[in-house]
Length: 551
Image 1 (cartoon, rainbow, N blue to C red):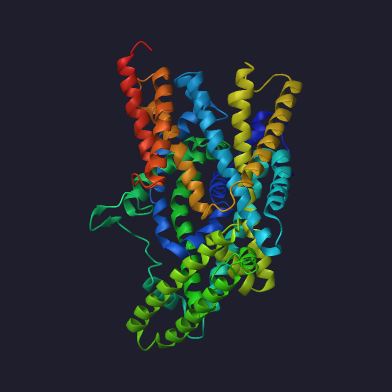
Image 2: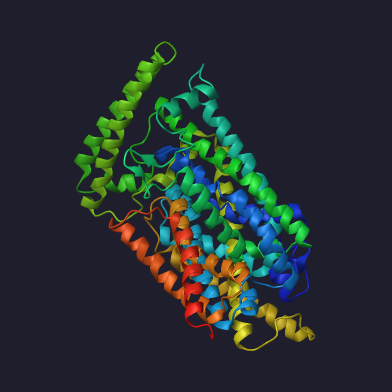
């Protein structure tokens, strides 16, 4: 990455790779930025516990890629912007640009902190290291090449990282099926996981009482809510916009984005399928009652030790019964399915009781083990060389996405705040000394954001499913940011003053809806927040503009 990023020491080189990237590098960079360690670490656990319905979250993505290629890419390419938010000052005013940039910095800074925490789990779980120190080590190593190399280092390292990642995940899937009892193949594994509700790829969200708005993942929320989330993420989030602004021209940008829309859904399907296969594997093997070994051992040394041992013994007995009943799978499949579902329901109840002991024992570690399920399988069952490969893959995925995020955070800080409010022209400077000064300032901002994200990582321990946490966080801000851009593109009568106040009011209302849902006052899945935020900005800004046309 450092070798490839030998470029002129200026803003174009550091943030946009001198706009020289071909479409396939744009594609890999876009995919690598979105597919963080959270994707490969948490997604199999998500499918293991909740089934594959999470894949519906991506169903709106291909349509979003088409809209972005039609409306966003040509405009950004024509204006030769460094960040997406520069356009907003052209269209509205400086305060709208600044507010939107601030929302991006806040959301991306917080979510990048979570992304640093994800791989730190691995070292902590493997070696029993202190998670706080591990976060510092992980983030520190990452900052070195991101600060040094800029956008080109990010793009070329992501290319190699993704190749290794796909090979490693394919090997892991093969090993899961290979380690099943003799005579059981891939299709048998799917039948067993499917009979226990893990292949629920399509769910409508409709119940006897009508549509369940609180249901997180279903066809409707995936296509509509997922579309608005993807439109905002790829169209207005600088961590992604910065990837396709590096392309040679807008044709290369569009090619990379459209192929991402085609590849992302099957890619995510495959990663989730690993979790479904893993569920089948643990029907035949001794499934731990809690996959986070470090916290499990802490409980066994606490005041709740006796209760923990008792529940674990009952759980292990159910594991044995499951392995016994599965011997009749080929001769009595329907009867076996029914009995297996009953035993898994009992196992889940015991697992819930076990997790309740953590609070009684005063254990403050990560007591949600969704993120550890795939990792624990890798450590316990794969040959040592493959263990190293899979752990390296999770590091690579983490660093690829976090590096792109830090680069985008620095770009937004430098272009939309530092240089803008110093009233310095952001075009290519005539003086080499001036270019070098801006280049060094950019590196300092990258370093500062790296430190900030490490600090955030220290406060996200115990958040549960990390892949879900990142998407919930993004949904709090993405809808409003998208709404501002949609008004800019399609509602020409609305001016800066109206959209600025509409955005502030809409953001407050989105947070209010989220809090009302969290405390069960109303029921709205987080994916709908993207649609709500975008619509609120459009409607309120149009209303304000009609009330105060002179502004």
